[in-house]
Image (cartoon, rainbow over all chains, first blue to last red; front, top):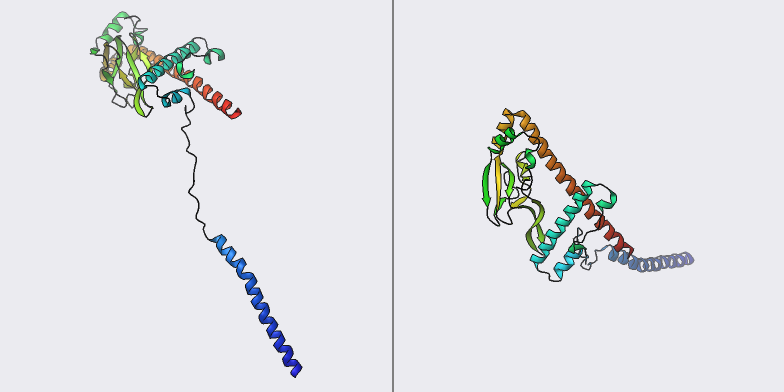
Length: 110
Length: 159
């Protein structure tokens, strides 16, 4: 009987120690999971500023940024349109690949 | 006038004179606006003298500017939106120098065409020719620009 009680006590003690050890071992993991699931404060997104794509890289825009007066830029635009129109008319007179993509002396492109 | 009016081509002298009698001459001082973008298109115009600039608004260096799209010279017509629904001008027309235009009211033209179908047919063909030519020119200009954009992108991507 004494042996039985001693074995029972040791077993209960073992179970208790195991439970404590298990609890201590798993608490860190659960906390870790919880901290992972918690939304972290994100650094403010620093999206790159997207420059306008259409005509964005043509020399005309650069010229504007470099301080060319608007009047001069408009004159260059007019000249560009006239030259392009003349080139397009030449293409219509003799439609070939070469005449379609003939070079221009437009100041906007040089 | 340096060239025969393009919208009178193919008409005999009597028909051309009857058509011209429908027009009203207007003198535009330097810088005057003939019509604005989006305004009702009730008149077809023939340039008699000077020059008319057709422009579109475009943002240039942070400012709204009228950028030249096309020029109309003596003998050429403009404002064909007057004949085609929804009868709104799609460009702005200004006179960069003192100019004279002859305006033809749409209602008067259509009444004349109804009474003289052969004249209406010929003028419609002439207007169609002008529209077609403008389309082809703009198409070619657009292709040239597209090629430059593609070429530029290709060079940028190649480094």
